[in-house]
Length: 265
Image 1: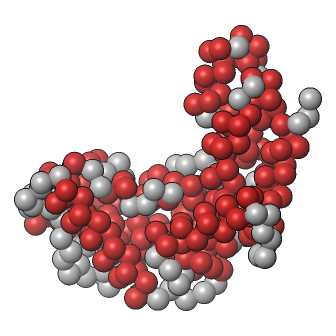
Image 2: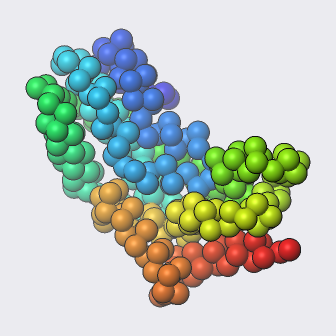
């Protein structure tokens, strides 16, 4: 089920749903679903995807309805995914906290940009709508990611980075670098520090995904608080070598894998 069908089942005008979907590039569900591993990295700047000057285009009741439906679909898909993966119940209260936080951020952003009108919460009736297709799609993506090889994921991140594009321009030999050797290429390019700094956040989210730490944390916290906790704990694992959890041990493992690969030559 796509967002347009979902919105129509809520009684939302189809054209309004299409417009909102296009304005906000399908919301976070689309970003997560079409992302390469680690998909949770797409949540790093939550909820910035909603905080754009396009908010000024949400001018009527139908568009406001569609916009709120998009946010709810994103939140329930993300929390539903985590609930499914760790087999824990999902509490409605934490969903509401996320909604409150997002709309407060929307208000702040709008006022700071001198918008006289901006989206506000409505009372949408979600009882008649099934969210399970969204939840299933993200759950399947995560399960695939958890089975994937760590080295392959890290090399993919390196190969697809802007840094790789830059070294290919500067160094003729880099144009022949294969995907499976992408990390090693940075040692030869003398841009090791930049690469390590770039990839560390990806390590946090890959480790948080594979250990399910993100999911256990999420079910009792907002998305923004979960992101903060994941990054703080991950940072301590690297900078202070703290390893008090399976998540932090995985962060260290991935970090050492990268350092070892960089020191191959």
